[in-house]
Image (cartoon, rainbow, N blue to C red):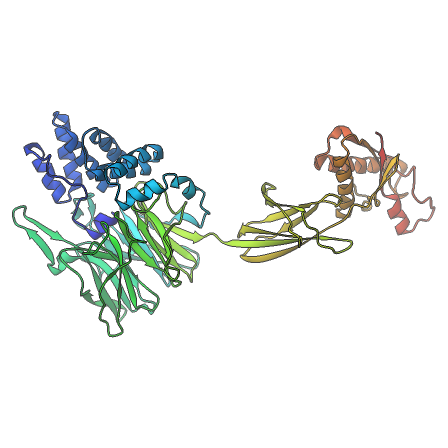
Length: 620
């Protein structure tokens, strides 16, 4: 669907009659009537009987281009450009190559296009930044994109959510007459209820708005009482007639409807509608004072431009204004959507993109340049009709990335911040130049920074994901600090790390006792903190070899205690190895109750605790 189907701009860029002849007359008439499906069959019949030339090949390329079959369009354009062609053919060939992911080949065709028309805005932008693609690929991801459940096997697009009702345009009504452009039924406006479980009800047509012609998409005022929507001018008998060709050239125009007794009524055309140009795909601002739309009316820079018009308090309209050459190009700009924050989203094939139509945004408060919003919203195919509901925190996108026009949800990527401040546990002093590592919930390192003079490191992270911070500093025990799933905003982590205060003699490394719980061999968090000190010393002294001795208290039999202490020795050794110390540098053995720290007969609980310990002897 997209631009040509929805707005019915009955012009074909680059169309030339110079190579028409008697053989192509029938197919050419079908093209003039925008019956591309049948026209393709007529041109292919000429190819089969050997009457193909550069003109026929270009016409086939154009037909498939307008039908959004980029693979077939590429095939025929590749043959057509072997003959002399108008500049626009090279531009279209470049666009379908991009849509098919062939960027190097697309750049070659853009070079040919730029050579032919160096003053074209699209040519200038390409020459100024031929390596734009790498910049686009590396853009930060802004949205999560997912196909929604209410799509049909026909075109569905232009979704916009108001309250709990999703409105969109669809060609799913098989009882409608078909449209020769793409052999699909004419479009109707549908609605579906979006419930609290994020499910969609079965779509139903908005019968009071639909006719036998194309309708949709629509926009609604904030009070829910007025809508503006696209519909064909033929229903108002507003068209230009070509008697010789027996054709009626209609346009898509804008209409206003008001709610009456829960139904849409009082449908009236907007005063600037015309039989000479189209205006459609409207979006009204939150105050209901400015209507944005797409049109090819006089004053347009390219094929279709983004325009705006004032909606006065008395219901009258001002004079439409073109949004200017920062937004509009020599190509096509379409599907404007204005947010409550005055961010204008629109689609363009004239600005630098991945291929076909891409979605762009521009802050109208800043008067800046439009920005491509990147993947996954944009792809090599057509991506368009981007809308956003701030209250529900969900947007919608239309795209033919899967082969047909479908509707996708777009949920903003939630961002949170983690401010880590590294501090000395003993002195409470801030520690600059500490290595601060951020890890995901699987332990994969995502990034590494060093704390500033205030001991600070700031990380921007995604919401609803768990992370962990690890802090490394010479002379301190490595600290690890888990971070619960973020919900946005800023989280503060006071990363308190313990200085390594270890006595190293010629025969022993003296740590605080590595105590175990009664009758257990698992390493406690207090024991782990001391063992991390040993890990640090061993990492700084590569030739150091350690022998760990584990002991128990007097409770239990000698045999049991010997086995228990051996399990403790193995736990201690395995912990050291798990931290990256080679297994050949650490070994251990249990000694049971044979070598108590306190030799007591009726030991107190504290004395028992002192006897349940590990010690570390220097072997080498």
